[in-house]
Length: 337
Image 1: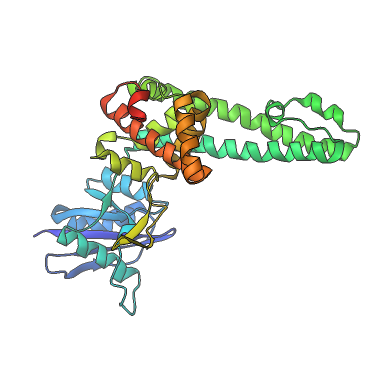
Image 2: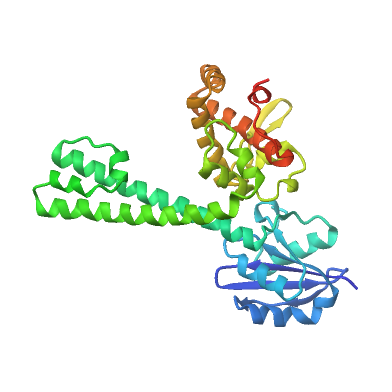
């Protein structure tokens, strides 16, 4: 007898359900987010379970990894891709998780990619670096605004980024100087933290051939190459280049019927970090490549600057797919043929 299990995961509890081939519920109970409790509850069914489907919520790591360590076969479910019949009058956690197990039994459950935990940790470290960079920018702009507001000096953020404490001499007021120094202290701290994180991630990625090949793209440096590589993961999980471009949020989300636009689908499906990386790469290649600049100007005249940038990002995403899949350097002629 084959059994099917799904877990509706929340921030402080989870609801597992186990059903058989006839959709008969064998187990259903709300449990605390405590791994030994979950493992103990599912252990009686372990030998007959086809898999355990866990919702891809913000906190799925501990549960999927923990179940895997205890010998359970697991899969990750994209909640945005699972919809119940809209005419249902009442639903709750128990009906929702039963629906997931039911779809698994029918072979219709949409599952996602489980990023290997060791590489996932490196990827998340690079995401932390991006968070720190954005926090540093906040303090750089605050310091720049304070200088302009109180002294009339228009100091570039590039100079402020260096946390040059000699700028304190521009202030006469003790309290204003103290506020400005607080910004510089944070910027200096973030500079050191960002440097350590970059070097740590670089040690894990520089040995991969895809990392060096990605940097052959005009305007793509170490940070963008690391981001594209780590956020992509195993490129073989994308069967076609169009799937990868969609994952990078580089394709339109229109819903067309009878040659007419009927609305938009979920624009946020995909990876926001890859979307950011390819937009940044598009901005960079415009500065370093005349061919890309001409393409951008042509698209901009047809539509607008934002759509032109996105069109160029789409091309770069497709190029990166083949670079990582085939492990070969960037060829500009193929990008704009």
